[in-house]
Length: 259
Image (cartoon, rainbow, N blue to C red; front, side, top):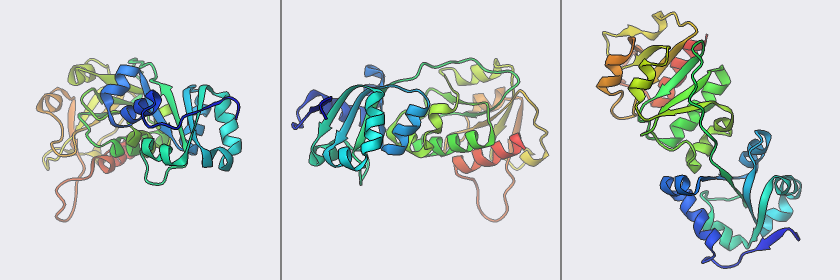
């Protein structure tokens, strides 16, 4: 307890900072910090050797999760204790566990393994989809995720929560000029499209050095990306469904690529 500084005012600068980081990608980039909330996510981050700049605990969580709090305290530069009522104001969840950590944004490594197998996401809008895709990608052994810079923030609270910690471990490569980066990557690229004339994904023989590209939930891939891809492929569907959710399409694509 002696290492924890008490905060009781909603006007405290740290309280304002956490609220900004929870809601704004601009704030996360400006401060080079992102938010981790909950015992499981903070524990996963510690396992990945992500050090906490600040640890913020509610009074109830301090005693309820005593063992975890002690572990997180050792991994933190600064520690703070909040009344439960104040903690609820900075939480992004409806039933907060009372544990939040702030950590520095990881340094990006834009190196692509030319013998790897990747999933690429262009202008993906929903952070929950990104988190789900990250879980599938890790589970099936994908080399990494290639992301266009206009996609949702991988370090938003929703992305982190949906990924169940996999975004800490999955190599993440972000490009501004997405189409150009894919075409110059040395990987054979497969654009996943909704087109009955495209080759069925089940007929593709994927090899090392491949990337499957999934587009925006509403609009799919840009024409530029479709035209620069080595091949256009599709997931054949029965019934009246016209398209699949991006996370579902990615899961099927990853399975076919990695089997």
